[in-house]
Image (cartoon, rainbow, N blue to C red):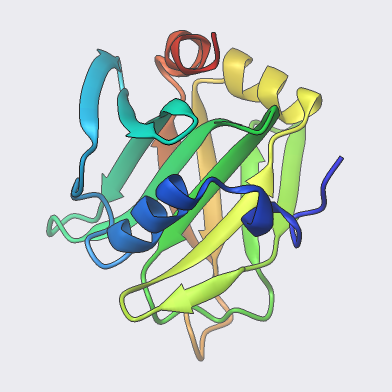
Length: 170
């Protein structure tokens, strides 16, 4: 099993370029991506790569003013389940990001990098986390804004996750 630190090397070049290009927009599609089916709160996105079609599911969240605050993408790369989350700048990177589903699953992930318009976390989705995502209704992402002791919490939906993930991993 790869560590989070080695996952970027495992990402396909085309998908990695897409992920880098989406950071400034935090949720705006670009490039040669095709929108596939919508599974409740998750959108299937696919693209052709030199090794075949690559697909993943995506969801974006915005604040009360409509400003993007999170984009999450989940799929399988080189046989491993992977989650990529983009968050806006202005986050204290030192404590990392908290990902929680219900009271049973709580994980902390380090930030991998920050680009001009957003910070990225790449993490493996192990069997325990995948089971929680399939069974849950919502997930929480917690980050600490710079110069704050308070954790900012972003809620995302898991409605449609199971069907969407099944579609992109078959």
